[in-house]
Amino acid sequence: MAHDEFAIIERYFSDIGDPAGNAVLGVGDDAAVVDVAPGHQLVVSMDTLLGGIHFPVDTCPADIAYKALAVNLSDLAAMAASPAWFLLSLTLPENDPNWLSQFSIGLRQTADQFNLRLIGGDTCRGELSITIQIAGLVPSGRFVTRRQARAGDLILVSGELGNAGLGLAQKQGEVDLPGDLQSRCLLALDRPQPRLELIPFLREFASAAIDISDGLQGDLAHVLKASGCGASILRDAIPVNSWIEQQQAYHYALGAGDDYEICCCVPASHRGEIENWNLHHPECRLTEIGEVTESGYVLEQGERLIDLTNSQGYRHFD
Amino acid sequence: MAHDEFAIIERYFSDIGDPAGNAVLGVGDDAAVVDVAPGHQLVVSMDTLLGGIHFPVDTCPADIAYKALAVNLSDLAAMAASPAWFLLSLTLPENDPNWLSQFSIGLRQTADQFNLRLIGGDTCRGELSITIQIAGLVPSGRFVTRRQARAGDLILVSGELGNAGLGLAQKQGEVDLPGDLQSRCLLALDRPQPRLELIPFLREFASAAIDISDGLQGDLAHVLKASGCGASILRDAIPVNSWIEQQQAYHYALGAGDDYEICCCVPASHRGEIENWNLHHPECRLTEIGEVTESGYVLEQGERLIDLTNSQGYRHFD
Image (cartoon, rainbow over all chains, first blue to last red):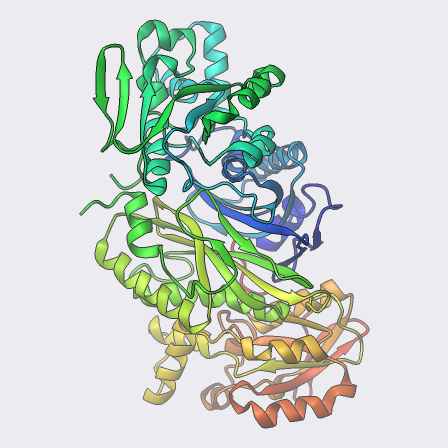
């Protein structure tokens, strides 16, 4: 069984995702060719996941494949772009057919789930590293950035925050969660749900959005910096599971990464539309956690006001 | 001096290349947004360069930056697509401002030279690795693949083959080249010229094309396999420097990688256009080295016929 670079690409990665999309030429040439939709703009993002840093090296390969795609899909969701295709660059310490087979099955399932086509990339030998470059489409001018939040906008987050961080703490033996919550948090860590269902809502109503990959506190700080605004958020309004609430362990929600929920800013005039959204999307409920202000960045915790101005999320070069 | 991930991106990578292109939103958000040209298709490619495998880890950072972009540009040239923008994912063992500064200067110069805009990507901490995803544009349907070579087509290569391989041999102390040739070969290795000038010629006349990254012998084999053809090539027709010719060291031209010249197939009816091309492009001369046949893959070396059917170029998982 030949397992050089080309054989690996042909065997494991040549037919992932629905070919009926906009890819004119996919895996196997010097480059891929895609038709671009008239009246649309292309939204592109690229993220690298490293073994031992972004995930333990012994993580199930299908989970790695899922997460590598999910974190990139989450970036598209935050920009309000619909996923179209992706490229994969895979660096592996050795040619392990078992690992490759599990990884490619996971990638295939995930691509099918999110209706994405793998159209190119490469493989190398080295420390485990997965780079995915994803592209999505948005009707021209309808993308959402971090830049347009305005004082008075409501700050909303989707889902529940802190579960992925708590799942990691459980995995690392730092906490011992009850069974039900344990599964929920481990699922949040290994299989985060990119909030693609929010795309139409964001296009219609959001002034700014970001996906929460490094923790709410730091990621919201990026929005405020890019928009030139401040914010006031209410700690007790942050949607968390009952364990975090009981233990007052809000640092999982504020500072731990990997939730991949969406934080967005919406003019207060759209409160009705938010309520309507929540009525129809209980699984992806938007919770109001505060509002955009002219300046300053504070967390209200009961009577206390905590200054978050210099706060940042998880950073790779600290 | 803060040097977390975001500071690194802002400081070193936020303004590389001409902003006047099609990028509506560049570095600094969840994703980048690009306008796509009506009547064009997007051509995308992604390549990873690993320290210690694709280049020695102590290579000058500006050379690494140049080469990382050049190899991706070479893929676009082989598809007959004009470069438009690129994304960078950079993994570094440590935050070394000196290295980063040299790397970003090299990247900036190269991006300016080829009129490309860096529109996004990320940075991580780990073993040195550079992934570039590049996109180019081609008028709809005018891209060139590996698939359409036909028996009777001429096989051409640009420039001179084997210089990069010989440069590597010089670096590794395996050969001792005369001064002039030494510089030429080291330049070929460190600063390969992506053959973008060939794009209009390829669009007009080529039935198939590939860039020579893994050695002529193996790369031409990819074209033949994809096109379902054979080939007969003349060893003595391969354009090489005088040292290779004198030493009969044609394995540098046939088997060593990294030349990034273009190998293309052109119907014999276009001989006049090839001559005309060569007249006007002495620096990027196309040399006829053989022809496409119905089947078989042979190298004529004087009286001998060498069977190349099972030959392949450099492979990462051998």
